[in-house]
Length: 165
Image (cartoon, rainbow, N blue to C red; front, side):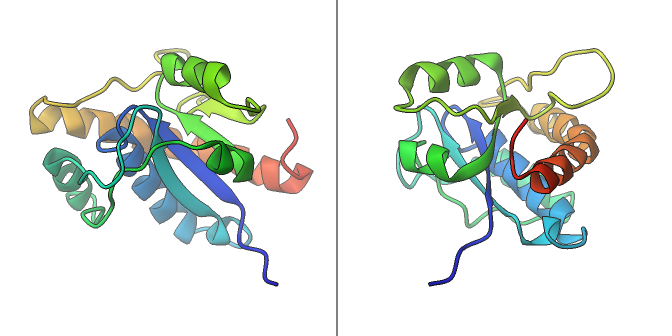
């Protein structure tokens, strides 16, 4: 029986805007890293998502401009099974973290904000661009891109310590 690569889970509300973008950006960045980072699986889900919704068009366009195609992704609800499997769960806002802590059968200890590891002070939350113009999606994308280097360093540490923090 083969053991699959560790999972990093990116979470937002409906899993059609921020978390697919965050997962796409993080997977793209990890592909350029040495092992074992390169082999990490990055998936997304939503705390209030339905199954099978298409990713918002502006999310697809915002990432296409960065050379990443997420057009094939569809939404799915966050489940306890996904939470249990994930070595790290990355939320977009504190309200996502709070919902998971309240609703999960076994609230994960590895629950963080996508921008939590950035060294500078400032907003650690990524606002929901849903329904906004493309520039709002691009701003959310850029906030995620800005967080990627600190996330990669955090994931390196997690892998080195076996996932305990």
